[in-house]
Structures are given as structure tokens and as C-alpha cells.
Image (cartoon, rainbow, N blue to C red; front, side, top):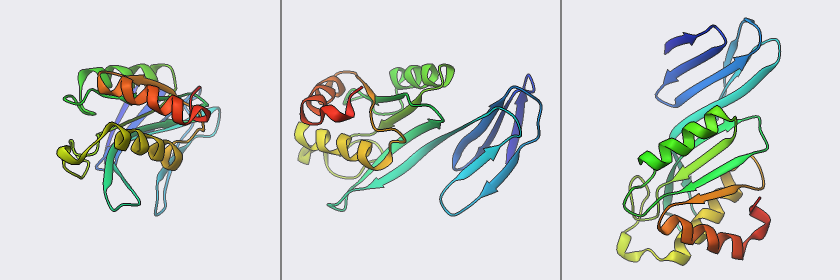
Amino acid sequence: MKLRTQLSYLLFICGNQGIFGFTSSSSSSATIQRDSTSTFLAGRTQTQLFAFTQNKKLYLDDGHRLAYDIYKCNSEDMIVFLPNLSDGRFSTASSNVEDWCERNRSNFICADWFGRGGSSGKLMDATISRWTGDTIALMDEVSPVSKAVFVGKGVGLWVAVLVALKRPDLVR
């Protein structure tokens, strides 16, 4: 693992599972504990846990998978970025929203659409209803909070509106 410190208040640990770190108001030591599902970092005083993980997979009931990135911190705020069909989750817009979430300590999720990027399926088999259902499944299965602000670009905005109509309980 590669270690990098910045102003001795922010620590990142970069590895093949993503970027994990913590912020702390003191220079307390951190301990890293691994279990079968995740990595945790903890300090001694006023620590805020966060983890950024790329290329996670959500396996859906029909056997397909969604590739997604998630930034988790101990916040009740969640931003779900729904990208343009041609951009996917590695776009400039997605990176900008992710950066904003990191600066403002908000949780963040962005996924590739069914049939695009790292997700399985054929684009010709995709429908707007499919993407809406997949977004709802992503929120139900992966989100650390129950309500989110949906930010959409292009078809992502359309899906955000359909999610809000179908499941208003997910929308903050």
C-alpha cells in the first residue's frame, strides 16, 4: 500500500480496492483493520470515517451486474450522480460532483448504466424503465443512507425524475 499525508490531518491509503482514509482534528494514530467485506480506519479523537471505492459490482436478481463507484463518509447526506448515456461514470461531470461530495463530506454513488461501461448487458436491450429499476436497486442495496439528492445529466436527469415519481421515499 502507498501512504501519503497532507498537512498531517488527512491520510489516504491507496490500493487496488480504492482509496480509504480518515480526517482527524488531532495527530492521533490510526489503526487499519481488515475483514472480509471492507476496510476501516479509526483514530483516537474526533475521527470521521470515509472510504472511496471504485469498480464495485452490484449483482441484480436477473443475473446482470452494475459497476459503480461509492464514496462513504459518516454523513446523512447522499448524492447519486446519474450520468449521460455517452459519458458513463468516469466523466468530468461525475468527477466534479464527486469532488464536491468529498469537500462537503457527503456520500456519493455513481454507476454505469446497464449495457454501458463496466456494467453487463447489451445497450440494445436497455430501456429507461430498466435504468430506473437499476437505480432504485442501487439505492436499496448499497446506499449508506435512505434518502438522496439525485443529480442527473442527459438521460440521468430523466431517470432521476422517474425514480422520484416511482419511489419518492428515496428522494431528499
